[in-house]
Length: 232
Image (cartoon, rainbow, N blue to C red):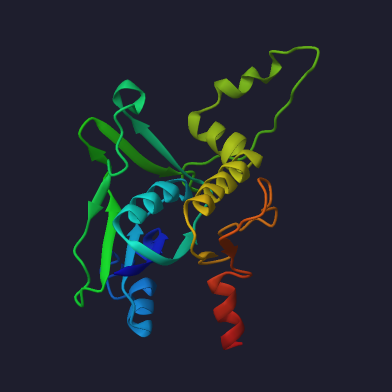
C-alpha cells in the first residue's frame, strides 16, 4: 500500500501549547494528518520537535525502505539548527534505523508516525540551535595575508559563536542544505515538495549549485504569506 510522506519539525508533529503553556505533540493540530483525512490517503510522518534539515535524507531513506511512496512533502525548517553526536569507532556500525522511534498511529490508523531518539545503544545524537538566549552579536573577522595565523582568533571563540557566525549563516550552510536536497532528489522518483511554514525560515533562491533538481520543487511562498494573502 503506497503512502505520502511528510517530513518536518514540531509543526509536522502536531505541536500545540495547552492551557498551561506546555507543549504537546501528535495532537489534532497536525496539517499532515488533516491532509490525509481530506484526501483519503495513507501517509507516514517523520518529525522531530526542534528538528534540523540535516536529518531529512536519513529519515526519507529509512521510510523508502518501509513503504511504496507516491509523493513527499518536506517542511524546510530553520537553518540555525544543528546536530551534535557521539559514537564508537567513527560510527562504522551505524544503522539507518539507529535513532528511529515508531510512535502510535493516529486513531484512524491511516497515518504512521515516526520520530527520533536522542540515545540508542552507544550512539548519541542531539539537536541544538543558536537561539537568541545563547547567541552573541557578530564581532567581525579579519584575515591578514602577511600573517597567515591571524584567522586563528576564530578558534578562541566559543563553540556556539563560531558555529553560528562561521558556519550556520554562511555559504557553508547553503552548500549543506542543497547537498542534502540533491541527495534526496537522487534517492526518489516521485514528486518532492519543499515548503516553509513562515517567513523566518530561509528558502534560498540560489538552488542550482549542484545542477537542476529532477524531482524536488520549491514552494514560491511560505505558508504564512499564503494565508495572509487569502485573509487580506
